[in-house]
Image 1 (tube, one colour):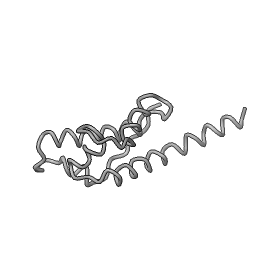
Image 2 (image 1 turned 90 degrees about the vertical axis):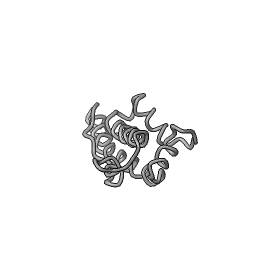
Image 3 (image 1 turned 135 degrees about the vertical axis):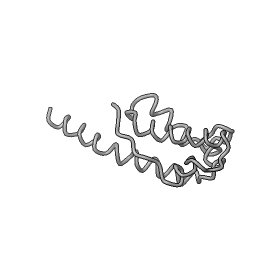
Length: 107
């Protein structure tokens, strides 16, 4: 199932607007976080792509391509962003969970 995608907070989007001074590698890092957010919301939570994105976002790993390192490299608080991303994903999931319960109850 493909879901409607909401946008990231303004502080992230503003970091790659024309006229900003982010070097290319940081613009790429912003794009990676933005894509992870879109994928988290777009894929059904029971599918491997969703699980892989969730695993990356939740991982405490500290290497150059970890969620923590990417966020910090572009000046974002990884805990704040993680909480916001998960909150929006949970809000979007609730209606589909309710629909599933209704369908099972109707059987």
